[in-house]
Length: 140
Image (cartoon, rainbow, N blue to C red; front, side, top):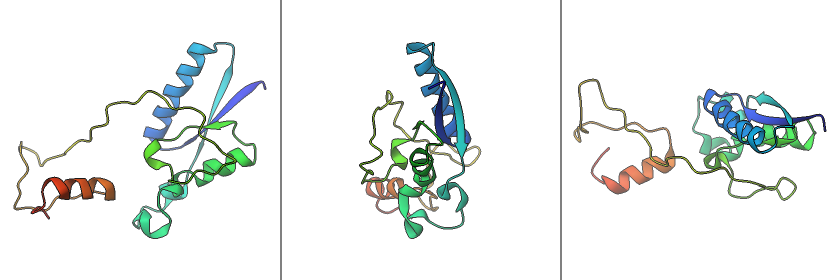
């Protein structure tokens, strides 16, 4: 193998996460040449609908899985939050990177320092919405 082809989603966050992995590969195996190949996934394309309605988390990995199966990439890098519950046995997870800070951010209106519980809270993540509702059951 002349070049290790690393597949990634093309979002800025995914590319940064993949570059972190590439840097680790270069530190441990400086003789290996790498190439980052990015893909636009169905999850990236379908911004108009809740992903649970059209197939869930697997929509962020489907195109990358196909790239592996068609040998267009040698490995792929994912956020674990994007991985489906059931993993294709032909595409095993072979490594995990060190976990970064797991906490989310709360963005408030300009000039505010606390949540106004009289106003609704917006969230695009079903998991985070459930967690938030559990912490603040009266919040809409």
